Image (cartoon, rainbow, N blue to C red; front, side, top):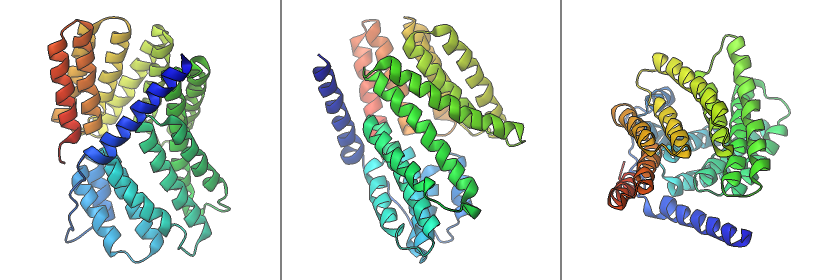
Amino acid sequence: MSEIVSGVHEIQTEAKKFVFEKLIPPLRLKIVESPSSDEAKALDNKGKWAEAADHFYTLSQIEKDPGIKADNLIDLSQILINLTRFGQAKEFLSKAEMLSSLGTEKNKNLFLKARVNEKLAWISDYEGDYEGSLARLAEAQESLEKISETGDLENKVENVLSTVTHFKGRAHFGLGSQGKNIQENINQSVSFFNLDLESFREMRQNGNPKPANEGYQHGWLARCHITLGDFSKAKLELEETKKLFEEFTQLNPDSGILAHYYDLQGELFMKQGRSADARSSFEASLGVRYTKERYPMGETRSLLAIALTHWAEGNLGKAGFYVLKALGTLTAKA
């Protein structure tokens, strides 16, 4: 039986890879007249990813230094990951990986290699290849541990290490969700999310709060407790998630981060058999997405979740409608 389940998950992963890397059209990248890394990051923070991608793409085309060029390609790949253009992101990451060995600074080369593997782990995670994600994360951490002196890279190294820790938690959660050593993997997941959360709590104590990052850890902890059926703990984690996301939204009014909270609330309601309440939560998530920043992956998940609520109620026609709408959202040209 376990072999059959494993085979089903492998088929699902390959299907996701086909959709994300072959079916979804590439983003049309344009050269901008006055490219700026600062402007690209500002656009990224506002959720204007297609515009940010044009800046990073232009910078990658005109930059001569291999290290800076690789940085721009990796930043561009992150935008493409946000827009679910995984095949296109992999192409730029491949170029960045080649450039990472051409610089004169060994520590910077190791850091760039770590960043490439970190982004490839993101893609593996989204495609459901959790073992592949863990392998990439191990390579990223190994590169970071070989850096002899962080120097100016210290904060950047800490940021990548935090991402590695977070995605290790996600990978173990994914494996548990696939039925593989459920209790063990979910417990591992909880440990990694708590470890990452502790680092952000320290930042807050030192006057450098990161409410979005804190909120995401609480959100994933809630998801772990939902999976294990501990709804009381899940609810407490969701309350913390909402509070932190609201704090972040006050500072960043254009952010659509609260959509993630509504999706998690919907997951809890579905697990409790409250399909109508779940649908209201998923619809609230879409409302945030449509009026704030657009996030194709998030919108697709919410639409599929709404389809599941209709399926649970026996409304197969409505379920099919939302599945098709989800596919249309995912494959739409940015």
